[in-house]
Length: 181
Image (cartoon, rainbow, N blue to C red; front, side, top):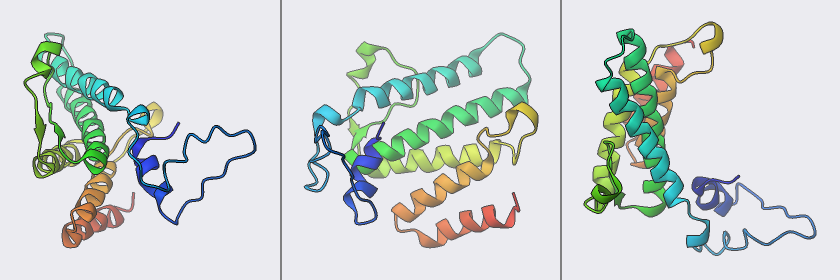
């Protein structure tokens, strides 16, 4: 399945070629003409994913169940990182979007209007810095492959490059390179 970033990112560039064998549906004919198709947008899927991340964060912060504090913070940081990636994809395609960083009800959703891209990017950067400072450098055993501080730094570098902040991006990329991870 294609994401909105695929559809409105590389597939529109000369870095990618859309190959269809005979009998193709033509579903991606809109890409070269830069059409934004509402039937192919996943607005509801993205906000459902944000709801799940916000719910995880809230449940972990307010749980009465005994859980190791470092594990709890790691899981909160993972959900925060995932939420920041979702918002990063959304703001690059739609610009202003509603910014929801807590679990809300359907009725409360009507109170969340679109925020400026600057506000969205500020939240993304804040979330990524939190994730970078909270997540471990590496994992062992069955946890290998989970999100690390270097994953957060890589996304943060891409955000900085998107915002034309090359010096900030360079610091994040050097952080990754110098880690030898």
